Length: 619
Image (cartoon, rainbow, N blue to C red; front, side, top):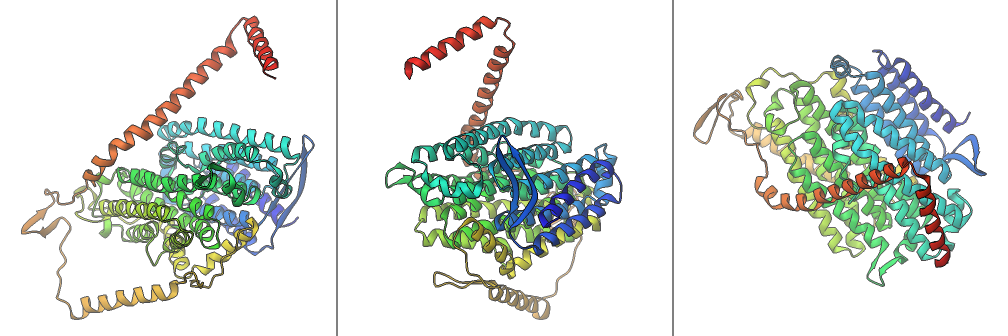
């Protein structure tokens, strides 16, 4: 049994174990050990990793082989699964069961997602790819539906998107086989060059729609935030961190490995001015900006972060679409970086919910003295999400920014900067309304989250900090992914990159940053004035004494002026578009149901005959 066989066998074993023993107290720790073993196996094995199992379906060979691109996503998948499994292993899981939910099915849904994603990431041909794609979609639905009635309603909203995307992908698969005679990915990367522009454009449209739905790109994004936010706590963290990135993985295979970005750029809508590649870049840019500012209007911390998950995917796609070593490295590195701090942030939000019973930002505040470790996790997480040093989010965004400037894309660069501004505004709202300001009287006796919850959160932000200070640790995996796709590989050092086109050394940046913090602390504590601590419920500001009955913590309708400006745009465009799509889907479903149930077969024969005659006349 080779490494990939063992990896897939362990994932299958974990799914069976979750179904049989998922409710047992010892299962999360066993699962954590097995996830750790899979990570070690995956990181230490030579590439490519080929499975010994091979099938044949409809005369087409079906197999699995993991290269550097697939391994990069697999490492993130297993690492995130390990963190959320440990999080579920103690007090959170006990509360979840006490509230009447099934911990067995939650563990099984997580294990099913990991297995499905590994099958997708290691697919050697489009049949294996489609099997993994569908398993990933339905395993994702199962995980989304675990949070209760609201979660199930939000998950059902995903179903028509998933089915439509699956049909588009299947249509692309059938046309690919008809036009090329093969579904093997290696062979397709050679024969795709023989297809005409019209054929290539149709395949790009079909596959692109299917993959964009999973990734949540505009305009197929409206399902994602509710479906992810309403899922059970650790499930939300896993979905937000890596599940949607399966769409990015598929787009990478399609755009870079099969079609090549050069051919995509040749598909011109306006000759010499606007190509399919430009369209993808602007879809990515709009995905950065519009969902990010939608996050500003959210008063539920889960929804705020879920909307950011959609926006951050735009940075990833934009970097890959640039196609150069710097941009593609930034886009891929952002997948890893985002997973670390997004999972940490979501787990921190659910730690606050675990103690206070709410994620409503208008009902929190002042928790920094009650939950200092959770506050630290959120502080470091939002620094990463905002793309500021010393966290790893700064590095990947810097690479994308640098690529846009070097490739002469000032408008796209401006869009990314606007997106970052919106991110900074909304994450400030998140931490301010949760941890800063005046403590509410009902939260005076709140305690820190238990160690089973704080340890995985802290581990994730420590990883985000370490790979921010020494990004070369993660860039080694990124380089393998670039090489597997056929992209130019970014030369890197432990601290970042050294290039005539622009260098980055995070070891120096972090060193200078901490030296400044050290000097400031020395001045404040050594030679500064003396300070006096006061209780959060007995405070003083602006010439007024603030007691528990005086609300001094402004949080309600945060950024109300900005929302006044962008709210009408949201309601008149996104909401209308989703309503139109939903109405069209309902109408089509009703017509198909009426057609299926109609009792007179002669009508069916008549319509078929008319259509057949019309087709023959047209031919």
